[in-house]
Image (cartoon, rainbow, N blue to C red):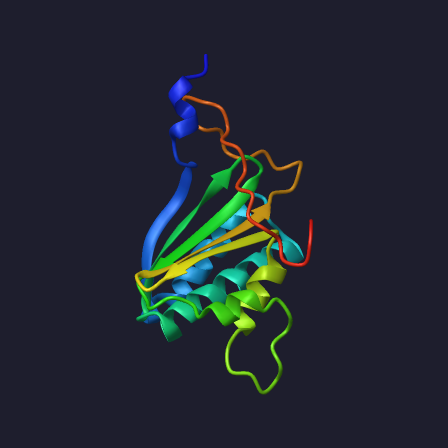
Length: 164
């Protein structure tokens, strides 16, 4: 029987941990291991890990050098949420969806994150930034069941450049 309160629960987490510049390789490897365990393989696994790495590197380079990773499954998608307490992303980088000019400083990490994932959302301001990256899991890979309740609906983060 479904508990009516299930809809208010956050998505089930697979992992939540802090990172800094000294642990980038370990953090990236842990995300890769867990994403693979949830069914991502090949190019899609590589794309997801590269997008997460771009975000991790941006946090270290531009947001005080440390952040927090939340990784889990919601519905039929794997999500990775990275949060920092830096000064926020300048709006011009979020507004520009085209490939930055070679002479432009910055913006390539956001461009890559948007193109390598099935969805990415950015919430940013002077108190920090949260980046949510989503990757659909293969149809034949059953996501882990939520203990005591049904699966939670998938995040609907916008995909750059149109619909998936």
